[in-house]
Image (cartoon, each protein chain N blue to C red):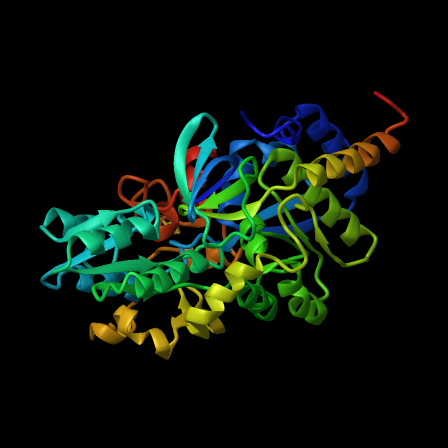
Length: 363
Length: 77
Ligand code: SF4
């Protein structure tokens, strides 16, 4: 009982037409970044890369939540999981990410109680059923996930739960875009903006960024036609020297975004400076739980912040996340680093660029 | 982490919807959605419906896109 339009957004005939047009429009070499990890996966899965004219290079950006989680945060998660009477709950992607000396998966094998959940509501349920335990949810992700975590904290208040805590390592995307433009190391000619982050924050959230940098931006959906259309729109803007911010995912994204979700998020979180793996600190690019909700903040209630750590030697995740390198540039890729023995987070997450290359890239 | 496939709301009980994801039934919280109704297609992320998909706008965008791609391909292959 799938929705009607979906078939058409997968229609190879429309895709073929779009590619033909793209070949006509795109005259000069351009570099486009798909910011979101889900886009990276869709692009590889649908074979879009192989269809594009050689003038168009696609770079994968910093939009895989697990990949940008700093190593010291992973170490902190591990320390939390070792505390007596604690049950750590998390989305599955985090389990195998290597910290400095261990991973959550290893800790679970050693006996820590770590449970993979499908949503924060499962974590609340665990908290309700285990009143003598402390349940810590590890919150990583962007603006799409953050409101779901915020809603869980508000629900915990209503349920009068005093044993539910969130470690908030959420990141915000627009500040990362500005960082990439400031860094000037990648020469990005246009951005394919994330679909579901935009569902929440709306087109309006990117306006200050666009006004400052005047770089072509198109919000895209996840079907092949959506992505090709976004690439086509960007190529047109660039060739005509007419940078714009456009919505190529109108069936889901509005100008204002999901105001209800924004309110919940705003209620519970405030923006703070945050460290991105391999990138470093970006001003006001993270979220912290507000003082009013401090009793749910694992960072406040458990004294475990670990200071700076170094990223694994030889891992180029940072450069990959900022579009300066591709996985095949990394000496460890497919050698020491595979999905079974990941060295960096980009090889762990199903949305990570290295894992996606490994799965779909022939060479 | 994102389920990009729109799922149909088939039942609403308080703030929880039963949704149909390509034939599989699941639950999704409606706490982040304004005015959900049975029959709406929604995008679900981490157990929460975060958005309604506007089928009308989907069809309109497709129509516009079709016009763009066929207009300038008069020199048909
Ligand atoms: S291949 Fe492995 S080591 Fe190299 S950048 Fe990717 S995750 Fe890091």
